[in-house]
Image (tube, rainbow, N blue to C red; front, side, top):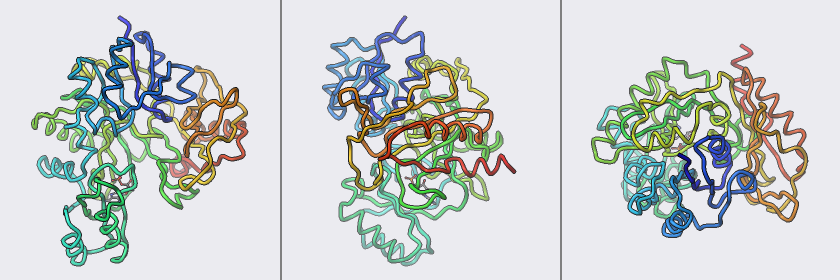
Length: 427
Ligand code: AMP
């Protein structure tokens, strides 16, 4: 059977997923909403408003869509899977109840408490005076988090009392909208960060892979945080023993807990972890692939992504073996100058962008569109230049060679993506 598929999203993550999905022999007609210029070469893009669930359902009914795949978190937290299910449309991703793992940091802490999952010590408050009183009697640094979805901006690491108090005010004064109605204050964890991805069918979790990303905008991991300036996979800091520990002590009990409370988790579970001296601890869950981590994971995936997602959504993951390339992959984000602050859209991107599907280099589009025959920038993060090789160092070289062939004076990238891993490889 062939499946007519609708993919929701428009970033580099969705281009990488679309690229992999399109390789499946199970793929029938392939649509994406809203998509971008890169995705448009693989799937038919449609300008549906993805916050309008009834418009998505209407599209699915008109096009007789068999399977919907959701890229970003916001539609999942808003219950798109529940609404599609009610309309009788098969889809991949967690229900709103299961997406609470990303939608509320306090909820995730409750699950961790209930199932003895290692995480930072924390307290939660729904008003500023109590939060501030707690801060005054706690040791610094502290991590102050808006409880809900804040597009990656709701976290402040406070090294001074003034910063901590200011972060609490920012939350309750509405800087993060409803996401800041509740604040979570965490112990500051020390260690190296790691991302681990698992695909889940409600009862079973299969490891997808590990990755590390670079959140800060400038070389040397300096400057303000961004959505992510680059990533690589796998991360050698997590050997098999660490991966087993994370799967056994964190992922599996989370899945069991979500099943027990009647909100089984189906979809991609992305654990943000700190590798602390006393073992890995959970920092946060996301309920979908990361961007730019997805791009490097897709470079390494050899199994059929569509088949894998269909299997997870019908609860039979156990029977499915996932195959990965032994190669490492690394991706560098090209962003418009000014990002993560203000920047201008519409600048022309030229040079070599197409490497076909067979080689070790692939350029995924994030914020792009066509203006006539010109490809133009249409966002902060614009392209993801990805490469794979026998080591992260070799993948890094290939990626930067490909970047040197792109002609876009208004763009910039970090020059040191993967530095920590390359240093490790070089001993
Ligand atoms: P989050 O949105 O929860 O992933 O937080 C964003 C970033 O803040 C993480 O990637 C970490 O670098 C940092 N962070 C969050 N929580 C903690 C914590 N408890 N201790 C140390 N760093 C943290």
